[in-house]
Length: 277
Length: 219
Image 1: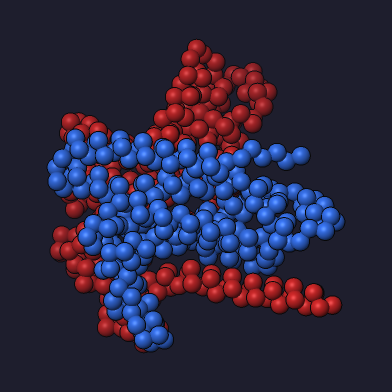
Image 2: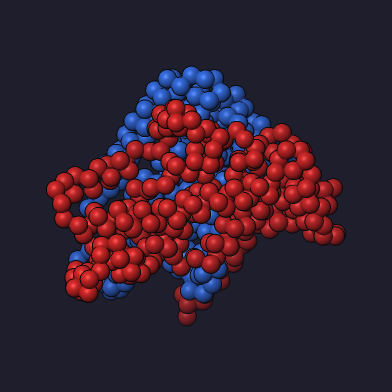
């Protein structure tokens, strides 16, 4: 009798602790959002705003444009860059993955091993050579400079190659019997069957592209073509005292990710448990 | 380098506890998971700005400390504390993610093992050390390798919050490479740094695998 009561107290305590911790973990977001909608003088003094205001958003979209920090453009730049990269990575990975797991030719394993071997090197090792390459191609300050290095992802290829292995060869044979070309097989048979892999690859690529900061910072000095993250950082650097507008910018930068995460959380969780293998 | 000393124990312990707690609770599990994971998807620049304000001299954390305990902590201006603060922030970001990896590892342990141990009269404590810890080893190795890689690849947070200061204490490897190559215009030195850092991180990963990784057989 006594032990049962003890367990109950422990469980209740555990729940309380977990709730408190969850709230602490969410608190920065709440604070961020509230700071972006309350008047400047209240940001550091009160938690709940006395009145709601959108002046910070107006500031960042209108006044900042006149200060040569075009945030609306930056938002569209970010969207454009992230979508291009995601689209390209999913399709190239789907095709290359097929070539590596289903087509038979000499040296296939060597190529596959090379791709995996290449993944071992951390990305930062190639920053300097990549910069020199982009510079020699004359691509500095263009969208291509940001997009080009991430068009193909070894990780995506690997994920697709692995998930194709689970699909029975019969499907492909049947499609071939009906006269489907390899191209058609990949798009109409393989890709729909590996939809969850495609979502995981797409999701993580999108988040990575949206969040990528260092590379655009290096190759992009033109305020008109900067993605949001870089522009926000430069704004923070020069106008750090405009806390309200900065918070508004941070909200704009964060919100798409949070929504995407909440909408695709199923695939996100799958992706995490897959990284175990 | 110093950063690793703070960050790795903190994040591993934190995510382990998180995973453990998550496996104990039955209700609201989705809520807990989501609230911890949402930190992970936050964009680097945005949350760096957010935290540099949250922990600033007049920020809410310091004013809360001042009101309740009567002192403030110079989170980012004290050389040693600045490093710790950045480690705390990165831990905030990654506990949910690593915790879930560990949680997935714990869920894979068959329940029958615990029941058998129960019958043999093993206490919860023994069960934890003899069953959970050894069998969650693959997940633990994954987390450690991720965390090691992260320490070598961390850039946005120190760049945004402290810029490598005070007294170059928060100068991480990547930040050092970046400033050498693109601000002091010394690309060949930066390339050398990159290779050395790459070798170091590779060495650390191998070390982790040697020390921690054990063959696990689920019968």
